[in-house]
Structure formats: C-alpha cells, structure tokens
Image (tube, one colour):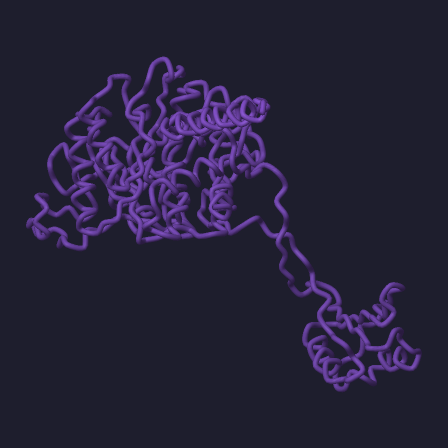
Length: 484
C-alpha cells in the first residue's frame, strides 16, 4: 500500500520549526543584551492622567448641609412640613435661614437641609438616624481629588523634578514636560523604603553629618564609635558608617561632594520638613570612599570597597544594591572579576553610562558596559523627555534612562545644590531598585532587576538608543511586580 508522505513532511517541518524557535529562545535567554529583552513587558503610563482617589471633608464656610434619605419613595408633604418646622429634628436648630429644602427628581426620598454651623448639623444627624422612617443621614461633604500618592513635606521637594515633574522651572531653566519623572509618587503608594536593606555608594564618601542623611546612614552595630579599636575585627577601625579605601580607615567623609549628592538622590530623609527627599524616605546608605578630592580613584581601592561589602554582608549587613556613578573607557579585568563575584552573591550594581555623548556599543564605558545581567547601565534623561546631549547611549549596552539634568540633592557641610550627569541618573535607578526590594529585603537580584526594567515607561525613539527603549517608572516597577 502506498503511503501518503504529506503528513510526515508536515510533521517534520513543524518539528524543525519548533526546534529552531527553541534554539532562538535559548540564544535569547543566554545573552544579557538579547533583543527579546528590549521588547516591552509592562507599560506603565506615568505621563497619562492618573485615576483619582477621593477623600471627604465637611463643608467649610457658609451653611453646613445634611442629606436625609427617607424610606418612602417620595417625601410626603407632611414630612416636608415636619422637616421645615424642625419637628423631627428634636433639639437641633432648624434649617439655616434662606437655605430651605432641596429635592431631586431621580431620588424623590432625598432631602438636603442647611444648618448654620457644624454643631447644629451633628445634632440633626443624631436625631435623623434614630428616626425609623429615615434610611440614612449624612453630611453633604466636600470631595477632593488627591494626588496619586503621598508627597513629602521637604522644603525643596518642588524643585526635584526627577521625583515629580509638573513642568515647573528648575534651577533657572524653563520647565519640562508634565509627568516626565520617575513616578516616585506612584511608587510611594507601596512604601517609602526599609531600614533592613542597605544601598552601598562607592564614590567620594558621604557627608556623615548632613541633616538630611544622618538618619538614613548604615550603622555597623559591631563597632563602638570613636574608641580607636577595631571592635568587630574586620580590619578597619571605627567603621561605623562605612569605609575609606584610600586611607584604609573607617572615616569615609566626603571632600569632593559627588558622593554626598549621589547619596541624597538615593536616600535623603523624606518628609522631615527640610531640604530634599530621596527616592527612599527610609533606607540605610553605606558610605564607601575610593574617589579622592580631585575626583579620581584607583582600581584597587574600588575593589577594596567591593571586598568590604562582601565582608560586611557575611556579617549580616544586607547590601543588595551598589551605586557606581563613575567609569572609564579603559577595561579592568580585575574590577570586572570583583563585580562579578559580588553579583554572584546577590548584589545588584547600578552604574552611570558615562558623559561623553557617544554610543557605548561602539566605545564601551566601564563598569556600566561589563556584560553581566547583574549590572544596570543608566543614561541621563532631560525634563523634556529626551536623552541629555552629554549622556552616553547604546541599544545593546545601556539599559534605561533616568533624570540626570539639574538634579537637586545634598552637598557637604549641610548644603544643597544642583548637578547634572549620568552620575545623577544612576542613583535614581539604584534608589528605585532598593525601594522595590524594600517589601522583601531578601528579594532575588534577578527579580529586582526585572521589575525595574519591565516597569519602564516606553518612550518613542528610545528603542534605538537604549536596551529597554524607555525611562524609569517607579509605579511601573511595582505594577510589574503584580504581574509576576
């Protein structure tokens, strides 16, 4: 009997096709810069109108009004007369003069009465609620549209367009586009950070006495401040808030200003009625100094900072995110190995993409361009939703954009000031990564990274310049968490 070969050919073609697809999927999952990673998974339109939430407050000024709904389908004239005469209001004052009674065609059993003050209205409510013929009685309250989430009372919060952009002028420059920010207000609906999670800032140190930082500094519980003894036996004396790799000391105070500015973006104390707010209102920032007063630092000192992080994590510090707002086009194998080791231990590195205005795919900038999934490379975003002219970019080597122009933050000696650069963009992402992880300080690195990137706000034209094709969105990062 002659067999029809067509079914076998079709099945064979399907097997080959499926194998090819599986192979492509395998290829994509192995590469940090895979094309599939660039496809949007969750789009969170932080620039779109936000559905309002509501609150009620008593009416203020003029008569205080009360709504009364009777169980009858309409208000009989007898009841209307009783209402207007005050007979059913017991000892309460009668309706305010000139206010009278309102009725509604669609709700014939509903009446609205006005009273001269809140005390009279409250007495009337008690009387109406005791009346068995009344279904309900309540204040005719005033409704308000709330913001999408809580906002801090920090004195200069309005100047922090990166956290909330309403198109306001900043630092003497014209305003940008309303909504082009990291949607911090949306993220803060889910939390303001956690003191159980540490963000390490490898930089020029931090002003350890700054009014807006001191409460959020990491504290080495094994060290007694100022006794000149290495109490915890980690090889560093008096390392209460971090480590100075240049001097091999426990005093990582900032004599440049760069690290203090970065730290404020991540974790300046929020809602303390002064200065600015960080992405995290509450967190723990570890100060690590390897950049000196001239802005330069040695590879070995950067590695020493990473070594310190791993050592302290073994003792329970819980550093989950590291910010690196520095770099070079020179590639260091030693630094790469040190970073890779830290990533394998569960630490996420967030790195500035560089300020040369070039394509990092062609001219890599390190450490942001090291090919490791545990590294996030960040470009600088302008208030008008463009990549800043000075910012590096790269479809395969730069992950996401964050605010990096005219950023207000903390400076040494208790000061505040503006700065621009991918150095300012990186800590927005580092801070948001920490905020996302604050709900679970042991959250796996892979999940922190995925939520930050999957939740980005897609921006037209960015897909050819950034791996995700979008900018940081805090609300989107939390929305991405609900889809997993």
